[in-house]
Length: 110
Image 1 (cartoon, one colour):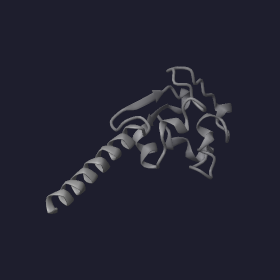
Image 2 (cartoon, one colour):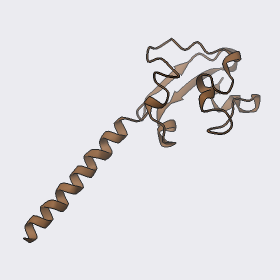
Image 3 (cartoon, one colour):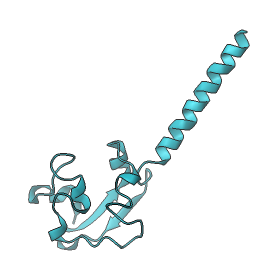
Image 4 (cartoon, one colour):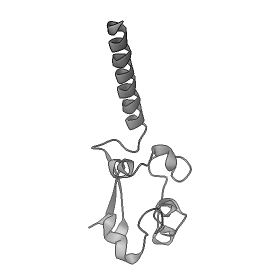
């Protein structure tokens, strides 16, 4: 009987490990991978999926509803920096920091 209980615990532990691995793979851009966008005069924007995943976001939170999956399809202009559009879907000052002029440097790097 003792061996059967140990086997159940081992099986449960392995199942949990596998589940955690799958959850991690469903998160945003994987650790170490970034997506770079031209940011015009404000400087480029480097999207780091790990930063967003660490905040609990998943790819499906933005793709394909907010951003299409095809590279180069999001043409974000200064006028697009409003709540509810592109990054402003979350960066509205409530869900995440807003896109006001005081926060440009949080995303744009010269």
